[in-house]
Amino acid sequence: MPREPRIDTLDSLREHLQWAIELEHATLPPYLCALYSLDPERNPEATEVIGSVFAEEMLHLALAANLLNAVGGRPRLDIPEMLPPHPRRLPHSDLELSLLPFGPKALEMFLHLERPAPPGAPPEGDGYETIGQFYAAIEQGLRHLCKQLGEQAVFRGDPTRQVSAAHFRHTAGRLTAVDGLDSALAALEEIVEQGEGTARGEVWDGDQDIFHPERDEVAHYYRFQEVELGRRYQRGDTPQSGPTGEPIRVDPAGVRPMRPNPRPAEPGSALHRAQDEFNHTYCAILHLLEQAFNGSPRLLAVATGTMYALKAQARALMGMADGEGSTAGPTFEYVTPERRRWGVGDRRRIVVLRDGPYVVYGGVPLRRKRKIVSSANDALTWRTGDAIATEDTYALCRCGHSGSKPFCDGTHAVIGFDGTESPVMRPYRELQHVHDGVGISAQRVGELCVHAAFCIGRTRPIAEMLADTGDSDVRSNVMGRIDHCPSGSYSYALERGGDTVEPDLPQAVSVLEEEDGLAGALWVTGQVPVVRADGRPLETRNRMTLCRCGHSGNKPLCDGTHREIGFREETPVRTDEESTS
Image (cartoon, rainbow, N blue to C red; front, side, top):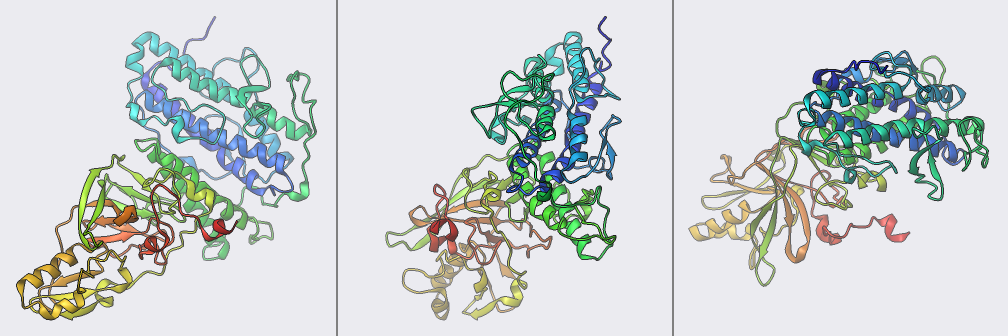
C-alpha cells in the first residue's frame, strides 16, 4: 500500500522546498573545495567532473527556488543557517559533509551524497537516507495537494519570479520555469536524474555531455565512480557491470593540500584577512542569489559571475599556512549583513561589486538620455528618452563587454575584468577651484570632468565668459551650461562661499548617449548613494558619472576615456591584450 503523504499542507510543502534549497546549497562548499584543490592542467578529467557536478548543483538550487516560488513561498539563502561550521550534517539527514581537498575521502563523501535510492525505498521528507527519497516525498506531497486543493490553489506564486533558461547556461540540464504540476514534476525529475541516473536504473542522466557532445552524460553518482575506478562508462555499461570504457587518470601530486575543515585564523593575521575576504565574497553570492530568486532573476548571472572571484581567493588560501603548520583553506563562515561593506536594507543605493558590475537597489528608475548637439557638434542639452524596464534590484555593466548592455550578463568574470578602484577622492569643497564673476561664483573639480563639453561652448569656454557675467544673458548662459554638466565637475553659487545651486534632478540612473552614437557614462542623479567595492562610500552628490566602458583611470567614476576609445553599446571594446592576440 502507498504510504500516506507526510507533506499534506501548503505550509509543509513550502517548508520542505526551503529545505530543498538548503540541501542543494549544502553540497556547494564541499564541491568547491575539492574543485579548487585540483590543478586543472595535471588533473583535467577530475576537474571536469567536479566542475560539471557543481554547475548542475547550481541548476538544482535554481530549480528548487522555482518550485518554492511557484507555490507562493519565498526562497531564503542569505541566512546564517546556510553556513554552519564544518563538518556539518546535510539538512534533515544524518549524512556528514566536510570541506576536503580532492582525494579518496572526498570521493567517498560525494558517492555517499549522490548514491541512488535502492529499489522500493519509501519517500522520506525528513531523516532521509538518499536525496532521491527526499524529492520523492515532495513529489508525493505535490500530487496529493493538487488532488485535494486543485492545481490552481497550489501553484499560486508570481510567475515573474521564475528563473528561466535564458538566465542559466552552464549545464546541459533544463532550467524549467514552474507554473503547474507537469512542470514541477519535470523540475524534480531533472534534479533526481542528474544525481542518480534515469528512473530506469541506467547510469545516464538523459542529457548530452557538454564537454563531449558525442557522448551521453553520466549521472553524478556514476561520474564519481568513473574517477574512483579510473575508467569511463560507455554505451552498454550498467550499474552492475561498472565502467568499461577509456581510462581516467588522477595525478595525486596535482592536488593542492588543504587542512580538512579549516578553522578561522587568529584575528588580525594575514590568513584571517584572506579568509574574511573569501567569506565576504561568498556571502555576497548568497545575497545575490536570494535577490535573483525573489524578483530579480537577471542577478543570477551576476551571482554566478561573482563565483569566479572565489577561485583565486580559495587557491591563495590553500597556499598559506595556518597556525598549526598545516595548509589553510576557506572556512565558509557566514558574514552578517551588518558587517558587509555595502550595508543592508531596501534603501536606494548603488553598490560597486569587486571586479564586477554596479548593483542598484531600491527600484531606482533607469532611463536613456541623449546629448543634443548643434550642426557643429556643440553640446546644447540632454533629451530624456524612454524608461528602461528593470527589476527592483538590477545590475549594470561596468566592464563594457556585456552582451545585454546596459545590464550585466556576467561577462566580466569570463574576461577577467580588473575593476580596481582609484583611491578615494577628497571632498568636492577641498578640491574645487573657484572663479568669480558678477552674481555668480563658478566652482570646478577637474578630476571629475568627463569631457561632455557643455563648458566649452561654440565660441568661448565658461572660464572666459565669467568676465562678462554682468550681462544677465551671459550669466544665465553660464548657469545653464553648468546645470547640464553630468558629472557635476562644474557647479556654481551666487556668491563666493555661498550655497551651491543645483538643478532639481530626480533620483535616477541615466544611460548616456553622446554625439555620433558614442556611448557615455552612467549618470547618477538625485543624491543616490554609491558605495565602493571596498565598502567606502563615494561623496554623495546631486550628480555624478560612473564608468561603464571599463577603461576609466578613475574607477568607479568616469573620466571621459569612453570618448578616446570610441566606446559603443553594440560592440564590446577589446582590451589591449585582446587586440594583440
